[in-house]
Length: 308
Length: 231
Ligand SMILES: Nc1ncnc2c1ncn2[C@@H]1O[C@H](COP(=O)(O)OP(=O)(O)OP(=O)(O)O)[C@@H](O)[C@H]1O
Ligand SMILES: [Mg+2]
Figure 1 (cartoon, helix red, strand yellow):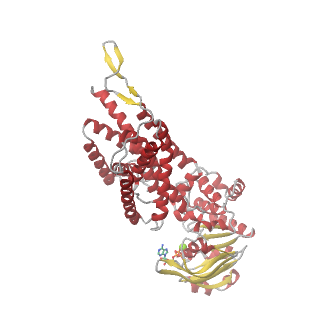
Figure 2 (cartoon, chains in turn brown, purple):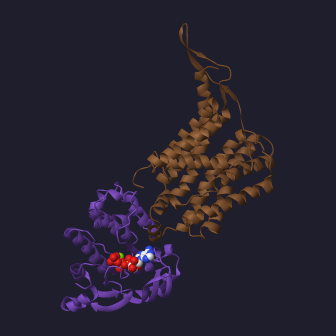
Figure 3 (cartoon, helix red, strand yellow):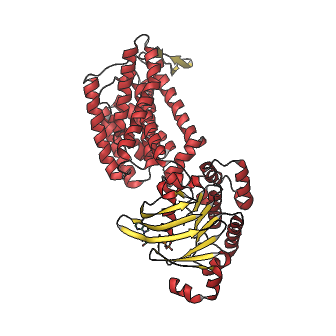
C-alpha cells in the first residue's frame, strides 16, 4: 500500500482509540473537576465494564447484538453503582482528602483487579461484535485522465469501528448537554466551584459526589463495552486506559471537558498513527514526553484557562 | 427566632467560639461587632452547619439546626451572604439565582421579586458572575440569598469595599426585609453603617459573647465601642 492510503488507515484506527479514550478520560476529568480527587482506580472500572460486557453476552447467548445491546446498558449502570457505593464506603469516610484518596483508590484498584482475577479468571475473553461488515474504502489518485477513485487492497474498516466512533461522539454530546444544559449540571458546577456555598444553598454535596463518581466510572465502563469486541476482556486491561486518561486530562487541562476531548483526539490519533508506522512503544514515549512538556511549559493544560 | 445557646466551635483543636450565646428576633436587625479574628465569620459558619459544634446548640424557631446535615439548614429558611461574596464565579448571574431558587423550590414569582429589588442584575443575567463589578457581585450575593425567601438572613460584612451609594442600596434592602419580618444577623465593621440600620448591637471578643445593647445606647455611649473595637 502506498503512503496516502496507509495514513488514512492509521488515522481511522487512531480515531477508534481516540473515541474510546475520550469517553474514559472525560469520566476521569469529571471526577477530578467536581470532586478535586484523583481516581487511580479509574482503569479498573474500565476493565469491569469489559468483564460485565463479556458476562452479559455469554450468559444471554443468541445473536451477539442482543448481548451487546444489553451490556451497553447493564455495564455502565452496574459499574457506576459499584463506584457510588465505593464513594460512600471509602472516599466519604476519609473526607475526600486529596492525598488519602490517592492511596484509597490504589487500594480499590487492587481489590477490583484481584476480584476480577478470582471471578473472571486470567484468560482474555472475546466478545463478538454485534455487526461487523467489512467496508472497503476508496482513495483518490491522479491517473492519466485526471482524478479518479481507486480501491487499494487492504484499505478497509468495519461497520463496527465506525459505530464506535459515532456512539462515543453521541455519548460525549450527551455529557456536554448534561453539564451545560441541565439542572443536574448546574448543581455539579456549583459543587465544583465552592463546596461550602453549594451546601449553603441546599445542594446535598455528598449525594452529588457519589453521583459524579458513579457517572465517571460508568463512562469508563461504557467505553470498555464499546472496545471489547475489538480488544477482548482481560483482568489487567485497565492499565493503559488509566495512563492514557491521565495523559489526556493533564494535556487537556484539569477538569476542562472540551479540553479533555480535544486532547483525547490528539493523543488517540497520534497513538494510532505512530503505532502503525513505527511502534506502539514509541507512541507511548511521545505521549509521555508531551505530558512532560505540558507540565513544564503550560501546567494549566493546552486548552485550560489560566484562571485555575 | 434564632437561639444560639452556649456554643463551642472551632477548627480542629483550636477553639474559636467559647460558650457563645445570642438571640435574634423576627423583624429585627442585630449587628454583631468585634475585632478582626474575633470569631464573627466562624459563628456564621457554625450556624450554617459548616463547622461541627463542640458544645451547645443552635435553634431556629424550635428546630435544632445544629442537629441537621448542613444542606438541610438553608431549607429551614436560612439565607447566607458570606464574607467575600463567594459567588459561583464561572456561572452566570441567572444561574447563580437559579441555584438560590432551587434551594427552597422557589419559582418565577420570587425571581421577579428579587430582580425587582436589584434591577441592575436584570441587565446582566447572561454575564458570568466573576466579571461583575464588586458592587454588582455584592448585589448578586444578596439576591442569591433572598431567592430562598429566608426567615433568617445572615450577612457577613456586606458593605466591605463598597461605595456609599451601594451601601445605601444594600441598607434599603435590609430595612425592607426587616419590615417583612425577617430576622437579620449582620456582621459589620463600620460603626456608621451599624448605627444607620441596627436595632440592637451585640459584641464579640475572642469568641466570647459581650454586651447586647439597643442601638440607641451605642449612639450615646461611645466608650462601649472603644472598649470592644479600640476605635
Ligand atoms: N479554616 C480555619 N482554620 C483554622 N483557623 C481558622 C480558620 N478560619 C478562621 N480561623 C481562625 O479563627 C479565628 C476567628 O476567625 P473569623 O474568620 O471567625 O474572624 P472574624 O471575626 O470573622 O474576622 P474578620 O473581621 O477579619 O472577618 C481567627 O483566629 C482565625 O485565624
Ligand atoms: Mg469575618
